[in-house]
Length: 132
Ligand SMILES: [Zn+2]
Image 1 (tube, rainbow, N blue to C red):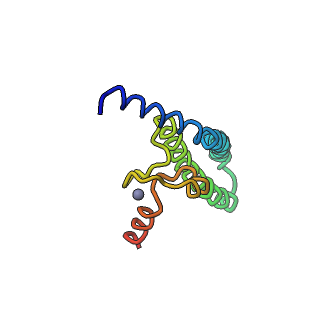
Image 2 (tube, rainbow, N blue to C red):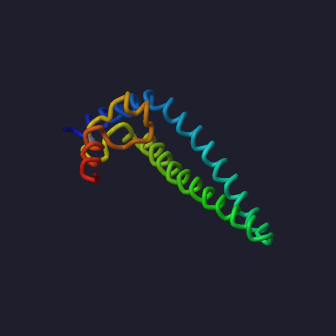
Image 3 (tube, rainbow, N blue to C red):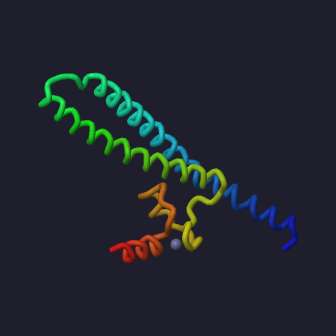
């Protein structure tokens, strides 16, 4: 393949991709903002609660329980944040919508339901059978 042709082909692919992924990128960026504000709120809560821990032990136990729940939320949102950042990065480099395992197109329906998924249904099912 002559280099000029490869360049032209890549240009067409990336322009096409930009059109298809623009709305998804916006959606992901919006979700990222939501998650950032959740993480900020949780962080504030945690800091605030740690300062207020010197009360009676019953209340303290309750606060520690809440703290566990907050940490769980924090952990989950951080995982989601990483997935969203990865998806946005894949959009920006033009790899979005292709399976990270086998390279096949993931499919618009699957992407619409799970915008930051990076495996096709076949690989996802294979991974599920393997782990169960
Ligand atoms: Zn695959």
